[in-house]
Amino acid sequence: MTYQRKEVIGAATLYLGDAREILPALGPVDHIITDPPYSARTHAGHDAGQGKDGADRKALGYLALSEADAEALGFDFSQASDGWIVWMTDYTLAPIIERSMRANGRYVFAPVPYHHPGRSVRLTGDGPCSWTDWLMVSRTTAQSKWGTLPGGYVAGPGWRDRDRMGGKPIRLMQMVVNDYSRVGELVCDPFMGAGTTGVACHTEQRRFVGIEIDETIFDAACRRIEQAQRQGNLF
Image (spheres, rainbow, N blue to C red):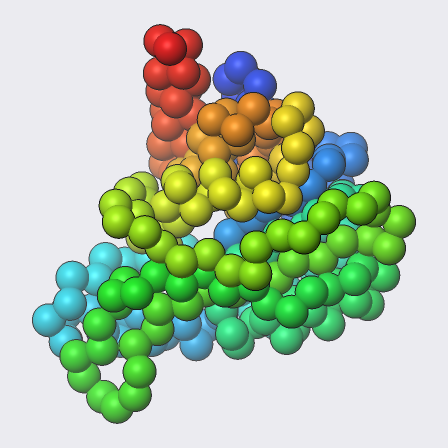
């Protein structure tokens, strides 16, 4: 396994490095819950609005995923987990991800929406604002019965506590972790970012392994997860 750094923080193990190099060497994980970069189209739309339409848009700070990237990651994720794969994406990459999951023998459900009304406002050009992300959810045919799960998530008051541009609210990730894993299981986020899924795993009593390629963001994730564990110990 090639990685630059490894941090063990309670029930969380964090790796600094490239997910495609690290993930195959980790051994099996119970589930993958992840929010990788979106398509070039989404990134270009975000960047085009910076400083031009009056909206306060910070730079994303990371590259988009290509269709080839999504295809390759579909294989990597399928090899790493026999449980749930929950992959957050945009509508452009959603069909590519579905195709890759099916090609790797997984059952793929219809996209599950995460809808955040008012999240963005279109101040230039024509057409609707983008308020919805899509969770591409798949499992193996051999996976045990799980029961009926929510068909979507709608942001509530205070759901703007993301740590970086492109990140997700902690409450959303707590709900997703709770729905698609069980207490004590190992959840992997190969695109950890600032560690929101790791924080959610701590609060929901799951073990966590995260991978992040950007050293500055990796350090932020370490601090957030460690802080969450310290706060939990206070109670």
